[in-house]
Length: 107
Picture 1 (spheres, rainbow, N blue to C red):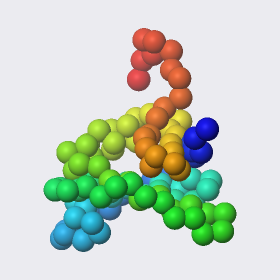
Picture 2: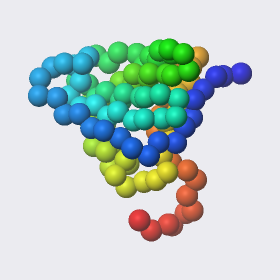
Picture 3: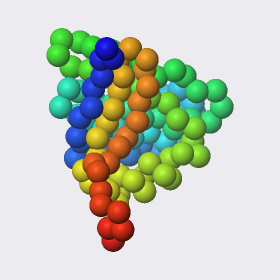
């Protein structure tokens, strides 16, 4: 049985880097979830593997995506709700997802 976190988040913070810092990230998004924080880093070049650290009851997740995926994430964050962060603690698989929506729903 897989152990995973799936939690709704309501706020995010965007970072636009002016130089190569933070794992070659061009952009980053920080989200606050009930169990801690998740950092989505959008990088050029080789991507690091997703990882997490748990201190007490609080998790910190570091996830890495190609920089060209950043516009799709920002579009989702700006236009959809509710949003959920998913992280599999065994496989390090991660994604952002919406709730089920009816077919043909307007914006």
